Amino acid sequence: MNKKKIFAWAVALVLVCIAAGSVVYVRHAEKENQVKIAKQAKKEATLKKKSTDPEMRYPINWRKSSEKKDYPDAKFLPKMWVKVSLKRQRMYIMSGKKTVYKMYISAGTNAEGYSNNKKKFPKGTFKVESKRGAFFYSPTINEGAKYWVSWKGDGKNMIHTVPTDEKGKYRTDQAQNLGQKEDTNGSIRLSVKDAKWFYENIAAGTKLVIE
Image (tube, rainbow, N blue to C red):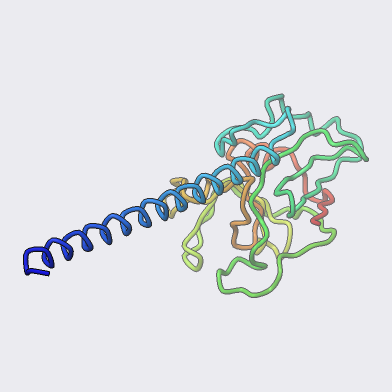
């Protein structure tokens, strides 16, 4: 076999290898794309499952009320108390055994307001405390919030809006987790409108059950 034929065979072999590599790469890229599509579909299905309640606002809007209907008049609710489900990331305004309003929350990671705190989030029966305010900011956790109400530790654990910076500007990166992800420093986060209603209507001494 002369040199020209050897060269031709070598070129042909290289081209075959390149073609084979291209096919493998394309198939790998297609597989990765299918995995991404499957993950996105699963995520959307999970969110849809979480939002099957027709009364609740969906997509979730961290500025607005969680339900489309008006808030209840707390003054006229007999045996009112508050229930929190960390598993479902929901708060329920209760009147006896009846749920009268539902709210999206974000809660459940740390116990007392510090990101390195390894204690579990408190569960059990508590009472809403009298300590509350329109705004706070903590340099320790580099986080603030509006319409806060204490429920444990005289201000260590609170119910309040999604987080803000030191100037009171809402941190949208964390606000978008409302109702979908545990994302908190020992407090229970609500939408802006829900937190304002809670702050103005839930009196000190109201029973709060976290489960």
